[in-house]
Length: 634
Image (cartoon, rainbow, N blue to C red; front, top):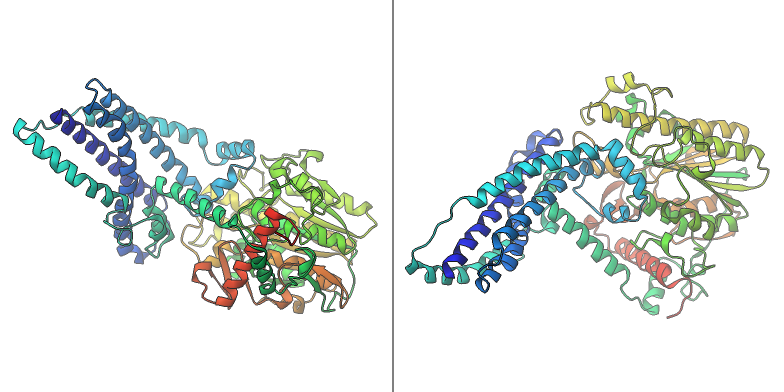
């Protein structure tokens, strides 16, 4: 029995080494695919990344091999004919498929998010599955990648079979007992060493939270194998959810209200954030107010260094003739997480308020629809996609919007997986505005700058040759990237032309332009956080001057609503807002980033205790409002 046990241990060790080599092979391949992102100073970091990667993957391989050891090797001690070899081989083949599929999925995922799996996976579970599948097939070669996974797996499983069939050492009878004892003594230490990532305690080991040890984002992501990256998603989501649902006492809530400058003795939570306008309204009161939330309308194409590409000429023109700030943050890292901020007036806390409908009639009074309605405007929500997406139609009509219009009622006109072209969406808004004689607020959410990038943008006038000729080193030069650049141009072009046309038709109209998020463009080389994550905020229309929105002004999505209220109300006019308007803001935060002293950085790098208290207070108020509602009582 002891001799057979030692043979099985050797087989488990083969599997352990096989998985380690396989993961390291995929790590090398991943870095090779994106090698252009590495700069000349990455040499030492390059070697360090693979060393740390090897160590952290001991966790993964240890966990994978523990299954056949527990359910194969150990049971055979008590049942001689237990199918240990078959179980080990089947498990090894299955996990080889999982690791290979993870590697194939990691490549396009990193191109989109600059991370090897993140919390967007959790958001994707609630997204339009059909549209996601269609995007994966058309834009990210799902079927060829699956075929590649299967072919590669057949080869790897064949090699695994050959490896497991190679003879193992049969120890002499006199050594069996000492070797079994040695295994029993050594195995716990080996398990601990693997568990902590090449160390015997957590402080000295490598785990996902401390894996970012180089100056290169690519190498930091390469340190994590796919299993560890998925564990990061699970752990991060679990922690944020536990934090979000952590009980908050009424006393704590009221203290948070005070920290945010609200009135803790108000009757409701929304009323506690009632503010009074300073009396610096626009010289002409606009009959029509339009806010365009552009799908992936990122900051970087508007920056001077990318001006020669001609991707955002309309946005730059609106900024020159109106007012703008480039020190601006989205509410979240995806369309719905950012949109939730506009709908509720609350910071993102990973609770998906669009799915909370347990309190009929409890409108989010801090949301843009509710506040604009309170200011006397009819509120109309426009979306280029389908009404069923993320429960959006029900959410909008429940929380402050009088009307909801989307792709369901618009001609197809070459629509993609995610909706009609922006051109068709803006045309529908134009028709409505031409007939509307009342005081109306339009919220427009676009969709075209989104994978799959399948529109014929060349037919729309995309200057492909100009863009291709002026590509900087930081942007890839392949056809797929140019197609994406074409969609960035198209979204900006049709948005800008719509605004200029309507500004002429309605000289008293007021327009706001911003993006739902950035971080969806794959640069060839690493760029700074502002280029990667920043979005613009542009004001345009009658009465707009540069002084209205200085370029140095800092803010976020949540501060647009109070800013509008300040521009629309006379002195002393009341409105509700969790955060102050842009006119009173010199820093900003969102779900993970802050802007302080004009510099964008991760929240973990923020050391201003007053700012940290405000961030914590805002999030706890958000949790209370989403889970417990508007009433200030236990």
